[in-house]
Length: 155
Image 1: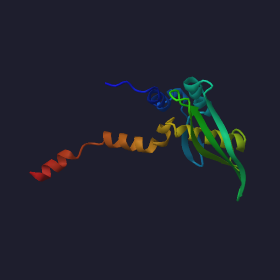
Image 2 (image 1 turned 180 degrees about the vertical axis):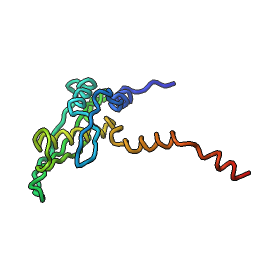
Image 3 (image 1 turned 90 degrees about the vertical axis):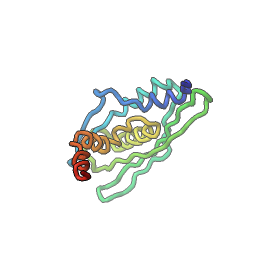
Image 4 (image 1 turned 30 degrees about the vertical axis):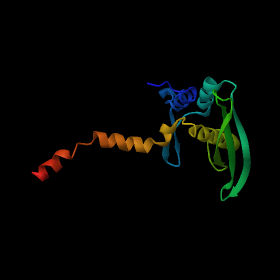
């Protein structure tokens, strides 16, 4: 069996599920949201890349809306390829309405959201985005099989 490249090993490590103790829930608009704190992503990046990564804010904007304004941040997350030394970049955005009640400022919350979304483009915490799909698969797996019912019809 061929050995994995260093890059493939890193991608696999980035995509590894976070420790269960890092998963938290909060209520937003009557919906329970599962999340991993922003600092856990930073710890993983530090473990994997040391000083070989950076998160650059590429866009900041306060957009007027019905509730006052929404703060929008775009972040480019750059990591250094260990095999070539080249920078690899993935970008995403975060936003936070000024009317949102919670901890932190609209700017820091929008930044944290953009950072986590950029991390997801490297495979980090994708299980959070597939939660409903995973729950649906689990429910189907636990449901009684209807194969016998179909077999009996064929007889």
